[in-house]
Length: 262
Length: 180
Image 1: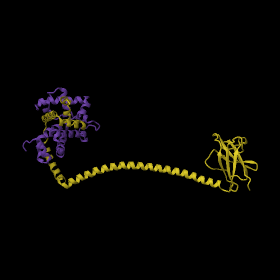
Image 2: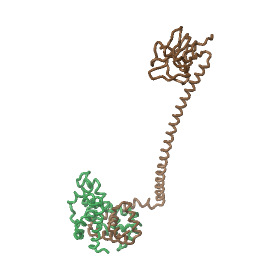
Image 3: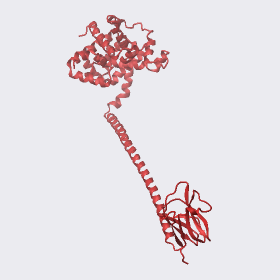
Image 4: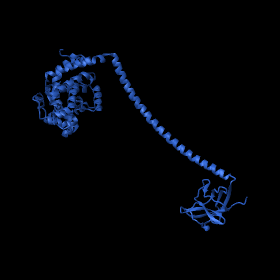
């Protein structure tokens, strides 16, 4: 550091008037410690300033001195007891320590609280997701159980419908309870249709096709269809979406007749 | 109390020796009042500030560190800051019938016309021997109570130039006042 240059910036004058930022002030203070020449310059600046200010001295009114001293007197009476008592000092120190500690702790615990509530939020979201998944699985299980009870039930006849020339690989079954007239459809293999078309199930009752409901390709277990009585056969055609009152026989996909049992 | 050294005085002040404050008042109140009353043109308020300054010196003497500068410099800054703070208070602004919105600087400008009778006579004697640009900086900083920053902004002088002009002025004053 070139001391002459440093001094000529006027930094010491600014320091003396308290015009530096805290950082600049610390810098000046550390340089003063190292450089006797700086300390000497500072001393001269301060003496110059003092002499200059004394040149502009202006005596205040006489009342100020006595007012000041009587205020000191009052202050003394009010303050001496607590300040000089060792206990009060300890209490003061303790309360400052407690205040510092509490503010640190509240800061610390606030951070912990933030973290914990975030974790809790995540856990709640996770448990909601689990409950949802569980409910989906549970519904699927119920469905499978009820499907199984239908398929295993002696009250239901199974009519296997095989593919026609339109769809040789297609296959589906109807489970029909002739007593309760319930009809369920199980798709084993059928191709996916365009959005405009839908499959329609027909029951052949006394030689005539009766609408038993429309369905889309849906491999998810048994489909409940319309109740039908007195069917001798079942068939599926492709119809415009929503179904038709009479089948378009040319589009027939699968057909099967009631097994001859009873 | 006869003349005592500054370090003795500081020791006595820190020991809460009330006579030391009386000594301080008797020896420095006029110098500090000179500073305050140039910043605050209302004599009554300036006297209140002077009293506050001495109470502050008494209360805060434990914060004074002789390693960092002379006691007088510390007291001067207490006085200067207290006076500047007071000019920013509502009371002063109302007293001078200036709008609340007016800045501190313009409030000072407005008061510039009401010169105290004793204003700067002793100071002019030395300041008039300085080059105009240097005496200008000293007057604004010491006599009107501008901060370096306010002076730089108000008169469009770079902050570094304010500092170096003050530096040159202080060297000149050193000669004038025969400081060694």
